[in-house]
Length: 123
Image 1: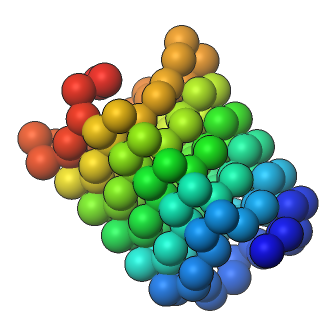
Image 2 (image 1 turned 90 degrees about the horizontal axis):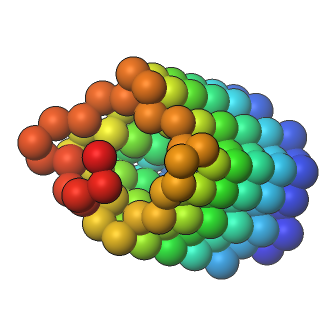
């Protein structure tokens, strides 16, 4: 599915299935994507500010350059996700799985919430 650059601000997409979809550059500010299936989706440069991604399946997703400031990623699966140059400022990653997630020096994690149940060793 190609939704690149789509305006989905505030959309209610709880449990939606977007695996392998193109959402690059899409505006998903404040969207409800709880329990959504976004495995291996292309979300590079997407705006996911304050998005609800609780329990979302983002394994292998390309989130490079995406803005996830203030996003709710509690218990989200980000296994093997591309987080290079991603802005996670103020995001809640409590109990999220970041095993094998890729980041670089431009990945912003200031004010990010993590707990001992957050999986992954790159913090």
